[in-house]
Amino acid sequence: MAEVHNGGILLESGTNEIEIMEFTIDGNLYGINVAKVREIIMPTPVKMMPHAHPAVEGIIKPRDIVITVVDLPEYLGAGSPKGEKDLFIITNFNKMFIAFRVHTVVGINRISWMDIHKPDKTVSGGSEGVATGIAQCGKDLVTILDFERIVAEIAPETTIQMDEIDQMGPRTRSDEPIWIAEDSILLSKMIEDCLRKAGYVNLRMFPNGRELWEALNALPEEHSLFSQVALIITDIEMPQMDGHRLTKLVKSTPRFAPVPLIIFSSLISEEMRIKGRQLGADEQMSKPEIGHLVDVMDHLLRDLKVG
Image (spheres, one colour):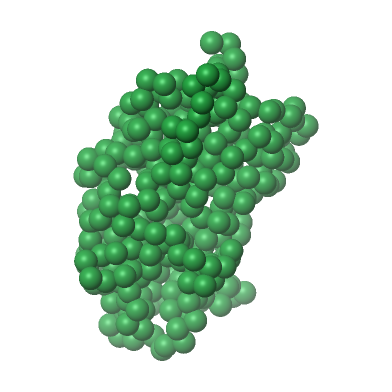
């Protein structure tokens, strides 16, 4: 059993770097953000669960924690039999522990988010694809998987829920311009639909922090800043520019610093909260708490009007 010491918090805040753990399935290289990984263990006996998704092997209970095991080769359609040398990558994101079966773990590489590119639809599988990025790690091209999207398909009840918005009852329409950086196609659509349902209809979506930052800098100075962007919401993990780098740039630029900024990410932990506060984020919360996000948006925008 090998514990992974989370390197993400050790990276200097806002440098736009990521540590990727590379692993293989049928000889193909894939990657996961080290910030999501807790440890790597040898496979242990798995208790099967009835009526589960075909890619769900069942559950294990190491260290008194019940963890769902996902057969990643099965999910990706590799069709290869389980091997004695397989490994379980234990992950923690969206406030959940999940084990993913893989064939081998290659190692960890630290690279810039600028070295990660959004795959085209022929690679990602279209709008429903699970490849969120292609990373250049040395001489190798590594496919970064959208683990949030995988879990959302396997267990829809664990992801963003429109019901949380419905439970808020009737809402007043708001034309405040809200800018959102989110690279996952699936989650971007979910967030947009929920916020529109909550009355926030003036939304501008960006696939990464770099494009949002460039759009900010292109805003005409002769117009009121808040009439053009009243609030920014950003994910952390994104190709080209991550949410921490975006936060650092926004909050260290006098012209943009007054704009409220919320980090909305599956990676929120106490360590990540510390990093976000250091960078100047106004609020931070974990996916899939969409109802909490709307409450915080209401509060920040109300304070902006009062101020």
